[in-house]
Length: 608
Image (tube, rainbow, N blue to C red; front, side):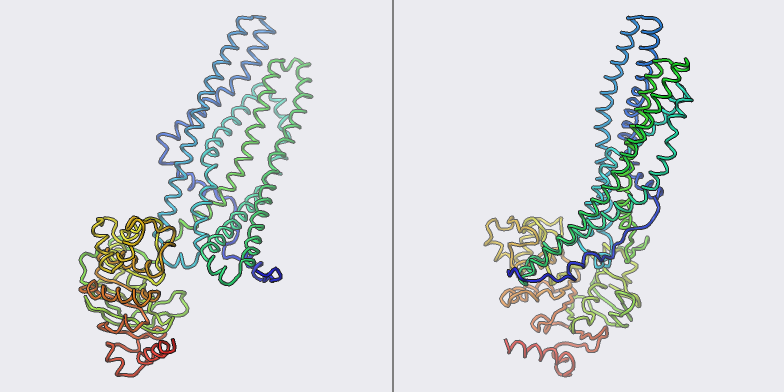
């Protein structure tokens, strides 16, 4: 590539604009309680077990300073000078440390199991929910941004649930216990030491909003980065074909830099909390030494109580510091949970009634009654069309791009519901029947065939997971796919790699036909399914379809004459209206729009 090629500055600015924005909301405890609700399945095993270990370790830590200061120093050494008592106290302390050690092992083990279980449940929930959303949801979002929500945002909650929730409980319990003991040992000294707390609380409160907004911004930048990365990998052939590698690298660099800066700013703001606690700790320690010495001289505090107090004061700042770190995790979790719940709160625009009827063994009659539809509530894709498709017949939809052909297919499969009128199968309005029972009766073959990672056998069986190997092979043979499959190194067990990269476009399309036919549907929709297939392959498919479509209602959306001329009825669409209908010979005799489309196609073929 030429080094002198200039980068389009508009491309570099593109990443600055997005439909996703930082959500300006206060900390939402209701939403956080919703997130904590994912702990409910573990409320009878891992959660109480973890809490018990926390109670044990916290109790041990609260007891030991009293044993050291009051019982070992004051009573055993200063008052009684009793070596045996000192050894007993030391033995008790050693036993408590061992108990705490064992309890900590189980606390860490069970809290990790708890956290991983919650993340597993949350990721499964959001993936399951997204699977049931309507096509409009996916039309409005990139695959990369959806991937970020399911993976990255869920992963960011991992640390919160693995350690955060249990640590919050442990630190709050420790903090309350220490405060009670501090006031019990010396109320005067405690009031003097904690005088700095109001200032610390005021400063930390002002940081919270900025920290939360920073982490939220970082999540948005990360979403854009992943979205562009996914898009770049999927479109690498187009990028290289148009020699746009330099522009693409520059664009990625811009998005990557923005992500780095967002992370740096968020980390910088979060890092301010711990030093604030350390400064407060230093001031508290200075007050402890100065005022504590005064109280000892005044016989208001013993040396052992002072030592115990010093232990407890250190224990006081420790949970505060950790709570600051957990609060940062909480802010990150809040930013991610907002994005996760935004998806979980999405509802399909295609609703299924509670009393939905199950469609079984349909004949395949399709009726459109004054159907209107709009994708954006502005421009109508269909404008009050009506027609009837008899069971077992073949129907073709032709017309210019944007005339409404694919919209009709989307309404039959109920990927969308009409905004006016009704779509019926066997006389039943599709809005009254269950989605699964409708789609189980219909197979759709698209122009852009999606092949999953796995074997040839697994990809064909996707049409009917319960099918046997013999049934899969029979479906492949019925459409002639076995001719190229048998030539592959491992036949039907050949791995096709991601998106079927080892197969040609025509071979991928043949697999999609086999997949659709294996499902044994009553209705088959071919949406430009032969557009990417060469003439020789198309001849194989046409020969197979004459047998396989027999007895099924089939809708063919195509421009090629060979795929539509044998249709029982052809509908010609223009701007959402049906302007002509009839079979091929009838429409040719009328010399209308269909006649002009066919003639134009012949001229193109002759020119080639």
